[in-house]
Length: 327
Image (cartoon, rainbow, N blue to C red; front, side):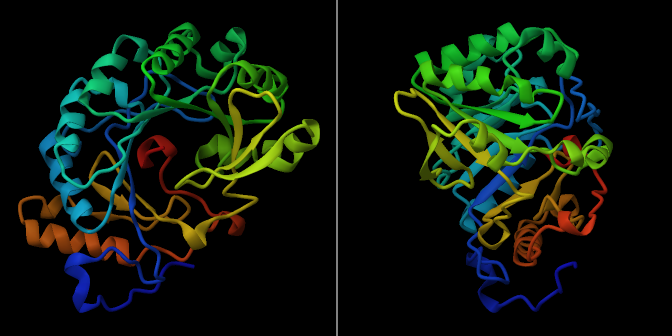
């Protein structure tokens, strides 16, 4: 069920509490729809130069969101690394007073060549999408031979003292056989590997929900994993085993929904605010880019009317694929 429009309170100018009382502090900022991989569950897209937000426009929108209380901005895509002006975007965001955390989600192909510049520009940490540690399977999933570059980026990040997490979408019959390899990896490597449920977005995700693997199945296979709580400021439930250098996390929006405490919104590369991944409601804020007061109100309005929760359990069909929405 779509959110019911409600009157906006008079305090709208300096608050970011939505209609349900959730404190929206986390922006997932997509800077491109393009990607340098062609993963089996996510087809690459192309940016429309006419609608792609420019660095100054991104900074203007984010600055207003920060005034409204957002203090964490995650750069996503598509693949952020395909934007040649990525460092410029990061520098502009770093200059905004009030952003406490500026992480980036990336597939890390080519990150090893740019990681020093990105960290210098202001990136605080990296979430790296890596669905397997098997080189042949990596090529089968991504259609690119890029795993060496990814692993070099992980090592460089750790050498720089930057927090690195790995995100793996678990798919039955595709990469679930790699679970033992991931467990061995975190025994020796101080990273968190987070297993994410396959979302029913896009044709592959919608058609393969029978291949979703839930946390309970993994935990039954590895009983040595013990819960250590929730990730700080995040939604992952985290587990460790004795002697493990890293940790294992689970992000399970399907089997363990966290809508009641969701504090995030998305800004797409083409200037649309999407308050909920599992709801097709979006607000185009591009028409207001030249009127700061109108832009401020449009952003607040989109946040205030954030839906109660996602609709995946109701057979929801997204009107856009993940690369268009932003990861």
